[in-house]
Length: 266
Image 1 (cartoon, rainbow, N blue to C red):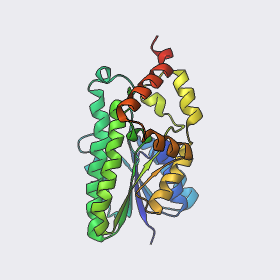
Image 2: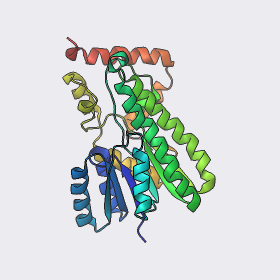
Image 3: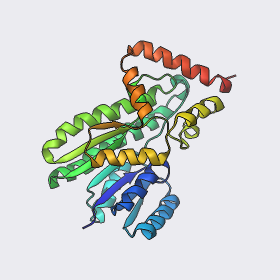
């Protein structure tokens, strides 16, 4: 029988590429995101290309009952996922006091929704005695980052929660993996409110393709790794930043980002 994977944030970027990779491995899919039209197009393409079953669940996971809607959809359709991939997430750029309560919505998606999905689907996996959970974090989660303060903190949660959950779930036969990418060549910069062309050029120059990140993420969970930092340069950056005192690292990052984005703050 084919295995089944639920992928959130599957309408674009890394999520879309993960869906393609999993379909190529002959996994059936449940794709979740807000855009029904985009999901329908992707489902049609993947089904025709790989001959797998692709179902869609249009849902806003940042809403209070979003995770429950996705879980209920699977239950009502007798779908029992062998794997959950928590890829949905968003970022916000700017001074925290200026972002105000917009941060709350981001935290609902990056933290609350991911946690709910882990315990909803994780409980089902624990009862069956098998399953995999992949949570997409970020290299930003390893460092205090000015102008991305709440986003970076939310990704710190993703890593520490994933590692703790991994050891809780091991006795039930369930694996939990966290993948930490760095810059990715997607629409992330625009969607989180960055207008600085200098920063965008830096991000693109140092970024990985969505496909490369997706390959790393899928490989990491397939090999049941605890956590993986995607890309050699990100591994190096994470290692050396770990040697720097946190407060000094925060100062360095504030000066660096402030300098790169001053063209958008004139």
